[in-house]
Image (cartoon, rainbow, N blue to C red):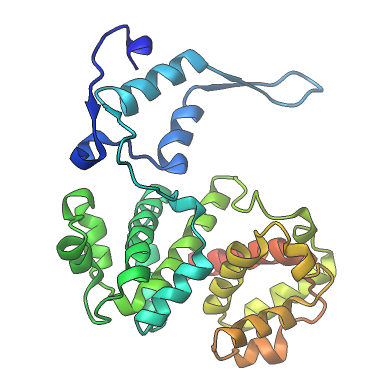
Length: 310
């Protein structure tokens, strides 16, 4: 920091004395991407692809002034072993939470209300980050299923001052018995937000699950989703992508040639969930796991268009 600013302003803090003011907090998608994009110039030459030019000196200056200026050096003595939130195994975390706190599914109207309340990508990221912090603690300690999520954040985790007021208001609709369903919804909303920003929400998923849909597959899926209300099934489809298909050896466990319907029916049964009758009876057998990601994208697009028409 001193080298970048030209001033001797650094000071040291031990882990025992660490407070929220000392640490750097950011979300890559919410905080860094807009900064980078605002310092990017695009040029197009005839017959060539778009050329992107980045103003790296200005990007560095803004990162320093926004995130690093005034932050101390944290000494290593006594620092505990920590796991990055993005590297957590949510298969295990969700299982542990469900073992300690009886969970209930979110009602359709509640899901719609949350989607309306969190009407920007950054707000979805904030909400998801907050819920994931809570899940990490609940997986270890459990909690009262009927306790409001906002009360848990304020009274147990002491996060009231760090959480925006409007977010606490949104979370007041939920109790701890809804926390896994809320996480599932927010993760899906984040991916949908990335799609709107023309970005790939599944960059780490094997290309074998991203094969393009043919006209027949598109027609079959459109026909299915035009006649059935399947918002909860779409959430389960998305969860399967981020919990199962992102694994390095996923293609060995879930063969791309397998039926999407049969795979999802088995997944829901493993979770002790009822398989929707319309899915079991009407979901097109022709759709394979090789089309999984594109099938989800098509269905989300169809759902959004239908919502806009209402």
